[in-house]
Amino acid sequence: MFGPRSLVASGFIHLDAHAIRLSSSGSPGGWWSVLPGIAMLTSLMLLACATPPTAPVPAQGVEPLRLSQVSRQGDATRLASFELVIQGLDADIAGEPRRAQGSYERAVQVDPTNPYAFLALARYHLDAGDSTQAIFLVDQAAALFESEGLHSPALGIHLIGLRGGGLRATGLESDGVLYLKRAEALAPGVWGDGFLSAEELK
Image (cartoon, rainbow, N blue to C red; front, side, top):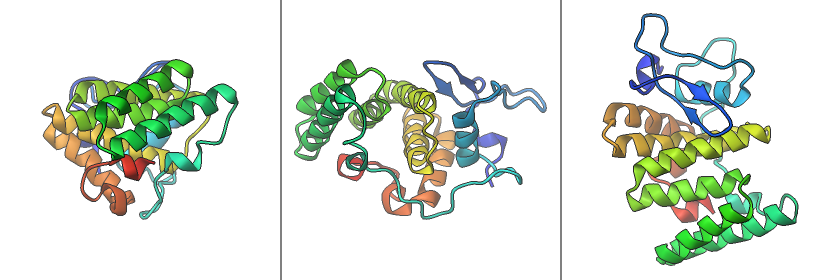
């Protein structure tokens, strides 16, 4: 069971239109602070931390989201953005990181409200070694998923795993490992190696 130690030791839990950050205040009994009515925040906490007795947590073996499963959903702007995201993943798979980055960034420009574009870009930056930017983009993706009412465990797994990879890369080893272990427990076939490849996300 993950308790308060699984939260980042540098702050608090916060969600606004732009970010979700998980951490702790360090004060006795005050290791989390939750804005009211935030369903995604609750979902992420259930996935990343201890399991409250009254709230369901996805069973182990949940199949993580692949973007190709949702890439034909939405209006014309969202579809154009998705097309660029898939092009970026294809470029990543082909070993062309510069082309991949350009596609992801254009996807965000075409549809700044597309959380899947931010998710793909977060994965790219983590793979490229820019963990700070990766965590920031995970925050963006999580807030946008919440704004669209998307609370699927299949999405939460990637948010948890990418955050864990980012925390570990920034030097918060113990916190990062806890997130990664949770992602691995939920989706060992994808997160068992602590890494999300472009092919796995596509």
